[in-house]
Length: 191
Image (tube, rainbow, N blue to C red; front, side):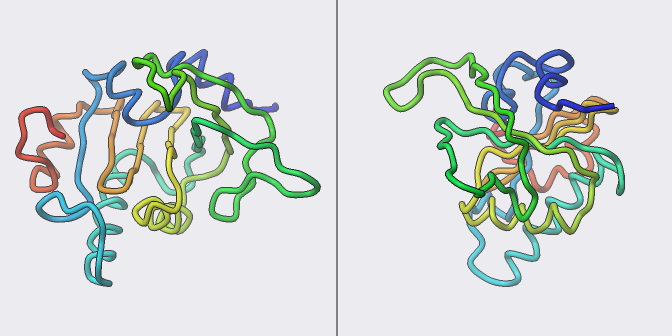
């Protein structure tokens, strides 16, 4: 059976682009957020801080995904360029599918954003090693707009430089918030 993660997303989850800040607006009741570093520090500056960042991301993601579980990984971009020759769109050594869709953000349009994202995907299995390498790139602002989704549970994990937006479906956001409360913002809006 041929799996099309892009069609699955639009038919099973949302008509909107799979990216944290977009989903937060459309799935607010399922959303929570955790920070990568103490005191909401955005970027790691030492090996110890990089280790803390990895520890937090793996701990939260491990609440959503089982090792070996099939997952879909989406990458969203405001603009997507065509590659020439034999070049392929890649994500930490994994080739993204050539098929791409343009999905709305549902957010207000600005001069830089026409309200749509170009989305590519890959199908893989949950493996903390792939995740850790990708999380480091995201934390260092070398990669953006990445979302992990379990097609069996619909748990959604959106890492960004500074933390992670999480949309659990197998348990409530408050369950995760209780477990990782010290990694949350003290602000009422959880930002």
